[in-house]
Picture 1: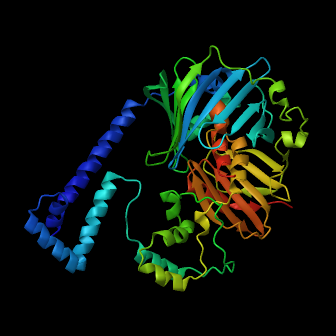
Picture 2: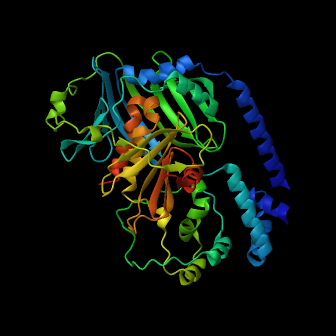
Length: 326
Length: 164
């Protein structure tokens, strides 16, 4: 009986708390401010150390981001474990592995500005309730907290802490439906603007690691756009196809089809390739931080769904994959 | 009786009363069950990361319905493949259940299961190293790159940790 009373008390307390929260943070966030935040990450010079935490692990990295006349340069360096360095410039990525710089992969060459454009931002607000959640101090700076609360339980909530002056993101967290943090990163030390080390910037510096080599257009594009005939029937509302490509993948003989769907904040990629009967390609669900991955062999094809969404969402997406071509 | 168990858990019984109650819990399965349930309730209220829960009976039941997976390969699961902790939600999903359970069942249930399912291996608890390639390929096109700008390769950096 005593437990019952206690239970009721806790539940009631929780309800009151939840109600109070909705009233406190009801202010909607203006799209202009979100745009500032999105642009700040690309237009600001900064240098700092941040921690990234997922599952039960924490990793520390140093980042330097500078904007030169032509475009952004960014250097990411792991401070724990074996030394790893990534340099990103104009859509190309170099990785420092075994004492030499190699071009590991290239994302689609993007324009100077992020693709978080006004129309995509308004789509965002139809999938998420975006609201201000107060002011907090992060890495010595004042930040505005913004909460992206999903309108269904098929995606995660996102919480970001943006520097009130520049709009730079100083902390970001992904929360599950129990409001538990499943992945987050936060700056612990940060310098915005001012005198930032640029000695590594410029092709000269990583030309030594064969950065000067021309990249074939196919690699630079991260694959070729195709119409594969594969469709995914069940996706949460608001997920739109953003890309359908055929791409080479390490360790695969045949090119892999990748279809990407996004709701503006999270994305789901579906990979389709012929099943080569490899015993390692077992069906199953795994997850790391906010990312869920689900493998399944369907009708002689190995299908993989990956996304920053709850496990049930990738499972649902994969189970609805079908071939609708010729 | 339930009142007494609750009082015992709150540390409100005298020593001799507690002794008696412990005796009873040991002897009477129903009381023992109550004792477990009360602890479970307490755990749930405190919202810990993991909740102890005896699932062996349910697992046994589910195992009866499971088809035997014939996996003739005898070698141990690739050691290089890093195990990734499944989130609680994921492991409760039907697919994950079998694999996860095989790690969780109480010792007495284990031999029985081993007899029924000699070749079952915990497939979904292992992430294959090549999964990293999918994660990285996905990462390229994820909108988090717009939002996080610079820090968008964090995941990539940590993924590559596991590859070597």
